[in-house]
Length: 553
Image (cartoon, rainbow, N blue to C red):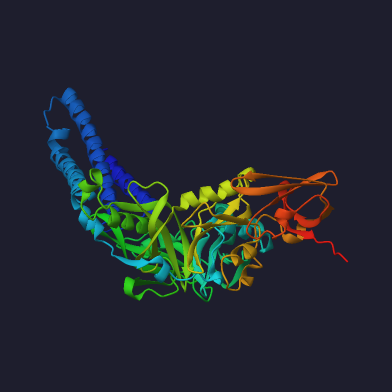
């Protein structure tokens, strides 16, 4: 019976370990904490199995002694005690070493080593920050791109079998900013029915114009995150690279539109802690071909090697621990950190993360902006005293507080040698209703307009016609707006959030006109009896307001 039980326990142990490996896919690498947890699980299961066998032997021994009077010593302590003790000691030793190593390699003891992982180039915003290319201005955030992209799902074949992944990763295609996302199987049963044909589409949304395209592939994708077996991207790569430490594969497309999954390869910087990228693995989603690159030879079309978390953490370490750990606790001399908001901008063919840098005691002011190339992690600090992103968002919301719009994370732009935040304003349904330009150096200066082309044209001399086709995913366009013509019967005004709002009574209705920099010069001289025209928007506001001047003989 003991032999049968031993075999069953061995099979059960192997089965549990196989299931664990199948689910968590730890790298078989001594530098991976995942591997050591996997090994600890095996040791703990072995101890439990030996204890169970020892208990069975103990019962058999007591039974044999009771009925035959034999005094064989076949107890837990006798047969399995040494093995269990050694395994237990090994487990305790591994846990203790892991604990002390994590403490020793923490920022408490190695603060300056963490600060030295990256270097930062210092520059001046006014002189060195590149002028924003309007044709590459990324206006749509992820949620807005998702709303636009999802409207195209009904145009595909077998629409009931697929959904659109919520990835919507920002990339550059031909130096133009896009968000791309592949289709995915809706569930396990849909996968069973369609896995032979694969996935034939992905969605790309132009972040400048808001126009989406459902791209049909010449060769369908057979490897994706929605696969369930060996063609799941993470599982497929793990079995091809069992000893390599890499992160979750992410979807990208090259400049020709071919689909790939990019998995960043990592190594710990300090023994088993603080993983940092050392290369990438590229997986062709259609053919399954893979290739590993080191950091110096990554193809230029790859947009993101470094994650936002990695970049923010390294930048914070650089600015926080230059003078050691205890300086951050007591005097905080020279301690800075990133703000609580970041976004991406496209420069050339690369994606850059930007965020503000503020002092440890600052609340609403930046000392400058950090710009980080997400493919190379080249970091530049552009010095400029400005408002934080959060302060700019609050200022933009205050400008339209009567509408209760919510601001998205702003886009940093340099227009005519001056820094601005461009903020999208959304309603409760998450639809973009308006845009705001906030002066980064004086965030109380806010200009709001529903038309992004007209708005941007007020701050730059370059051609903004590329923005004329910008899609606002609210379902509302200029063509849908009702044109109002009337005569001013009564007139009043009041100040709201620092802006003058004119109230016009005409034909029994009240219309509102907000005074902004683009308002016509005659607006302050509006009087009873004047004829006017305008386009009616929500809450009875008029845009493109004009006063008809009477001709005199």
